[in-house]
Length: 260
Ligand SMILES: [Zn+2]
Image (cartoon, rainbow, N blue to C red):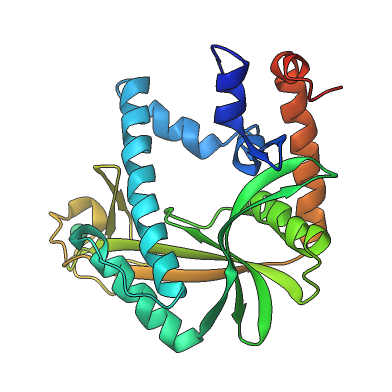
């Protein structure tokens, strides 16, 4: 990654909290290679196209985040039409499962002064009588990599803020898709680009995926909650990633006095 100066490096990779600069969790975990991402870039005509899709997809993700966090805080947000199916699926899910957030811990910027990192926690919530880090994603799937990020937030809440009641971590994936009536394929639009997936099982549908001239259903919401156990294992890997991130960015970290 190229940075013009120390200021740009600090702004793009970290936060200043209480007069001290800390690298942010999302920058640190980006050091880990993501084969899925290379496959995605490989399918496109240019790197710039990939960047544009990623940017639009991130904006769509931010819109869902904002609306969901507002609902979790007990308020009534304006819901843009484009994300209405995802939001109604979330509302139904929330009523069924029961999600109570700690209002102090919604979109909260935190730092770990000893381990020296910062990050924004989506929420701390109680679900089914237990309390955990609840991180919201709008991705196509729930990836194992999310364990790194959420373990870092868990350690801050548990060890720095002494949240003894904290016992677990969840990823809440909120998305929307269309289903093909004929073959059972699903279509998701991310960043203005449609991604069609083969059906998991084709037996119950009249037409095979490869022969199908798809007929798509109206857009429907999709919500999935997944628990991540064994935070210590993920946290060990996160601290390893952080060490590698520091090594990669030694030039700038030296300049800003972080390594002193
Ligand atoms: Zn089809």
